[in-house]
Image (cartoon, rainbow, N blue to C red; front, side, top):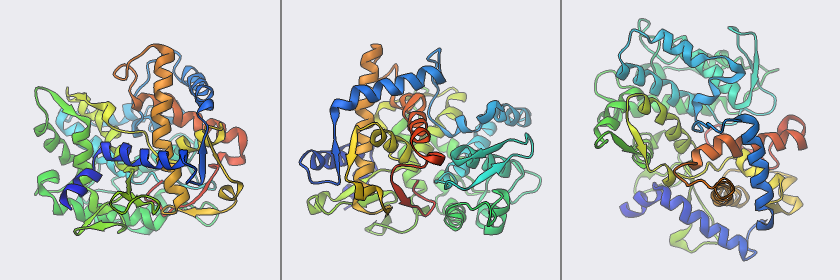
Length: 402
């Protein structure tokens, strides 16, 4: 059982188990059909978006840090100015605190929510709106228990976070509803509890997410750190924050789901979407400390509705009309299949794009294809096809998966 749990936390398991769903789909045993003749068209569409977004092809990682720059407002520079008196290690700790809390608040906001940034007067929605709202809350010390050290998230501050505080910070009202407010609060409160349970990761004195910097530096060798080590650390250290779903040997598996069409021992399908998104978002502060991140190609694409919507909207994936006519729970066969097929197809899209540019996986890793990229392309085609840019399939979200 311990071997199975360790396996389900690995990027290799994500790809292998998603591939089994892909094989089921090819056998006509899923709600979807894959039309690989559309692969070239999808790759060309993504390349067009990449050229629009990054004409010099200098593509950064797909991470939370991109959202903090929305509206051409350099909030990261604002943060760096505030942290100017700190040493590089302390700066990285603050950035870990910010990135982890912000990513955990990043589940889908819904089509009717928006955030007006008082500092700029600008209005932002969806993931960028959540990023700016969480950035401003962090900046005002909403996650710190120490008034003298507002720019941190610590165990006491997170455990004492209230639904009212989060709702006020995110400007939630009956006219401005945010999906999953309670789920988001519970997630951050649970984070505060977990920080105290793993001193090897988060420290004994003033446990905080930023103390992960210490641990990850200890896991580096010759100035290099494997991306999969960051993911494994996140899955181990933060695993208990997720709502109880599948538990094996007393361990909460998190973003892992079951598909009954697979053999009993192979039914578990891991995705770890938010954990991988978080991993991608922690790499840049580590690079700023001088670490070289290796093994990026081991991580997978993110199985969420922008990447998955791109495949559906451009015909790479097809589904019966019934799939689009009702809302689906995250543990339904429809959503598990959609997410698994998205993981497989992102790899195929990335490979076609590399072939067209004659680039290797090291030169154009998946994390840059996502940013360049498939996520933006999925949002663009959704906006062209549906009012409000809503995803093609409607999902019942509790604020902790998408």
